[in-house]
Image (cartoon, rainbow, N blue to C red; front, side, top):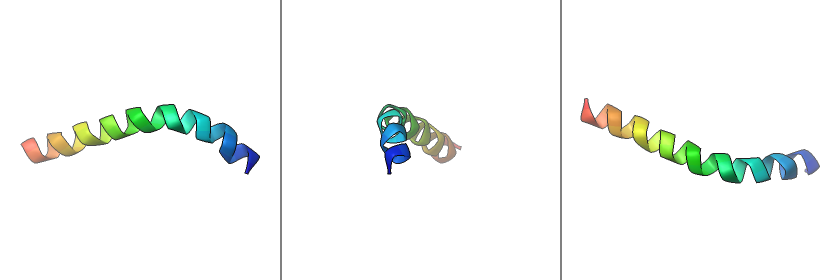
Amino acid sequence: MKLIDKKGRLFEKVNIVDIFVILLLVFAMVAV
């Protein structure tokens, strides 16, 4: 759980970027 806690903090920041990247990928697929 301690490892998840440390990664959890990084995940919070990465989560925002991840969601943005996923949205861009989905938008690109829909555009095509």
